[in-house]
Length: 418
Figure 1 (tube, rainbow, N blue to C red):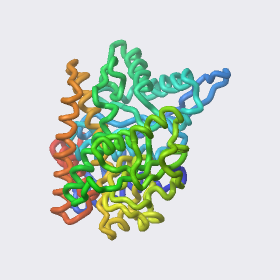
Figure 2 (figure 1 turned 120 degrees about the horizontal axis):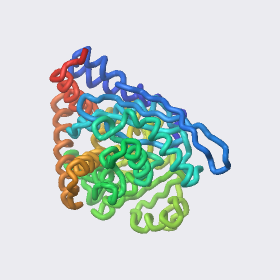
Figure 3 (figure 1 turned 60 degrees about the vertical axis):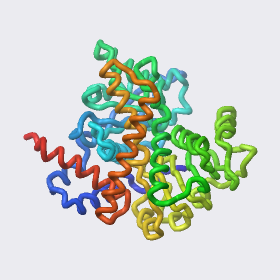
């Protein structure tokens, strides 16, 4: 699932944005503003390693748009992090927050590092130094980070503590996706996967895919992929293929996701799972199935494999998994693609709930969080599908049109500061 030599994700994002802007007859001044990030920060992150030597890592924080509210977006620790990727992810967060109508703009951060090669102490030192380097541009009313690839609730706890110590006060709303004891929200860990499941149900109903007999393939078995697969399995939906960073497994009769999760908990990867056959991960996306859920990294569905995809419905659990050229091929085949900025927006939606709860100092039971999430995903899917139908375009361009139009309206109302 490597994407190191893939297409420039920023340019891929711009292609969709420009198409939506053209169809909206977007004001050319707003078009120019939204074609560039508000702020790009590159920082050096020196860390004293366990061997006593200093390593200097490169980090980024990009704020694409602050028009709708504080920026919102994760922090990614990955060896393939680069500025174009972080810029694209920040822009996707702008559109994602807007498409589900949250009062946030889009931001994203990343550090070029393989976190699996760091000790826990080194990881903490890296996080604290990176947080100190970006501290002047983040905050509850400025930019609110969250976990992403290579980071988790523990990393968010270090960000929260470092930022709070610098400010001399407890600032629980500076990050989301943190532990419950530090002001995290119930339901946050499952939110993205639950949102994918919500969207699958609505899309299947609209496009007449019978989930009782459907076969689902999930690429990626991290938080999003594993949680989505668990929801599918619990609902009686057959998952026939799963992959992770080490390999892929397939069983035409369905994979018991509960047993697979137990296997991965003991063995770390899906490789070797005894109740399914091992297959080449490259073949996973083109397996015979009705629903495909790419939930790994960007640029996985390309012009090279799009023509071989057999799914009728694709639900994008990952950010940017489908290139623009692949979109055209899939659209010509009649494949319905529910885009990332809608399909995986469950995570940022519950992050918004967490931010609200932190600022109120009052926390909701998980059932209430889930109910509110389900309502947001249902409403947003209907709005996107209606926009796409009205303009006779794909769900992706419909989602972009809805999102870009909302941000543009905010610019018209606020004006441009001079």
